[in-house]
Image 1 (tube, one colour):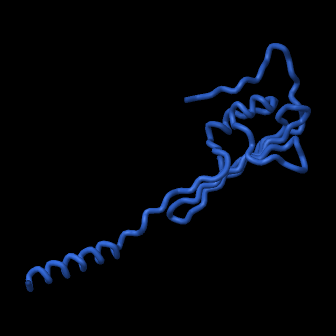
Image 2 (image 1 turned 180 degrees about the horizontal axis):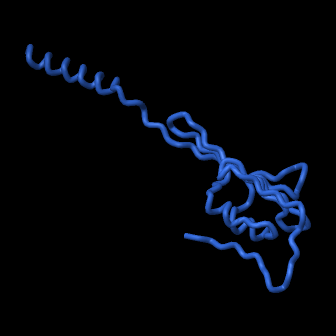
Image 3 (image 1 turned 60 degrees about the horizontal axis):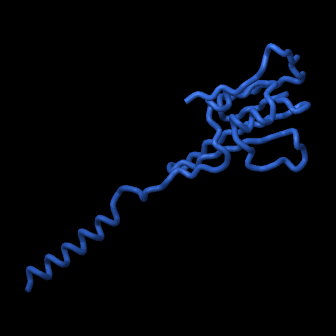
Length: 131
């Protein structure tokens, strides 16, 4: 009887000790917003149409209530270790074509073009999708 009580008590203590281990609880990364990858952003070029942007980046998550010619793609990942990775791409359209691309968190550069590029019949802008 004494041995069985000791075995039960030791089993309970080992079970409690395993629950109070030094390892932390599993936490997942929590992504929010539109997925914005560097390969997607590198395909954006000044002069692309809205349809081409939707093909490359997808539809923006929210519509801009104040300016229909500006699309914002926002992506955040809340890492399990507490870090937050943020990426934002703002695309401004002039006469239906991309006039400016503003990037934050992708490669920390900003591209701004105030003029519409001259369109010719021989040049066409098509998105290049890489695997």
